[in-house]
Image (cartoon, rainbow, N blue to C red):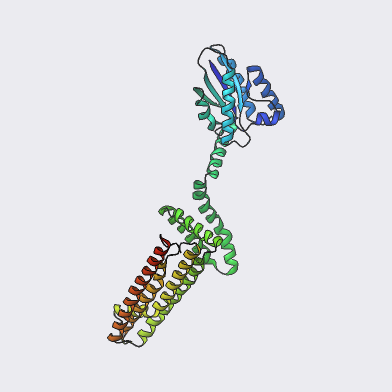
Length: 365
């Protein structure tokens, strides 16, 4: 037995005519088609219902045929597919036939055809008949394709972001011309498109999204590290500037070109104090956040001491290469830095072990 199944996924038939579904039988489907045509002559589902009646009449001369109309929901989503499945079950239960039932599915476009797997899971499908107005077939397919592209976040971001940047070039160029900055727009736009292409090509979008999410989460939860990172970035910039100033001062006091070790020593001598301040700021911010989150460990306090020790060693080493200190002073600082690092490590390890013994478990302070 052949079942001609007319599919209206967004339930235009039920919403516009009030006809209860599923509709089973030739006369009933024809009546439903007339009712929908009277309610909305431009609705493409009218063609689907009349095509179902036409196929019923065409095949009924050779075999037993039944025609039915099933509908989904206005949203046209998974719930609509499930409703179509339930109505197909009702139609199959109402058919009285000893022969196996096969189906011909009639739709008005690609969107309704998304329910075909649901129907195939219930009854074998011989064919899928798409009925649209001939002049609108390509237009409807293009519209549905564009709609799917716009609903896909991956494709939407890939296509629309660079397109939006390119479309903004002209209005920004006009604005830049008014402000007297004609070359800025091309540079900024080119950089934006280039960075976007680079991030997409290297697959870094997930990394950037994760970083943005961490920053947003930090703002909402009051993380101290956000502030300390900003301060540390400023200190690093200042350190770089001071390193260049120190290098310029050494060049003024030196005749001839500088040797590479001298250049490195001058840059280090000028920048290391600021870099150390940046390291102290970030480490103290991290320690504060760990304490507030109740994940503090005493060994975390080693970080500021390590930063100070390393900074002192680099400072004295660069000063020695520049001739500012003697070898004895350098040796004293190297020894002191080593002792401070070792003593801090041992001290906090002992304190952590002692607290763990008192609590009978890992230190959770």
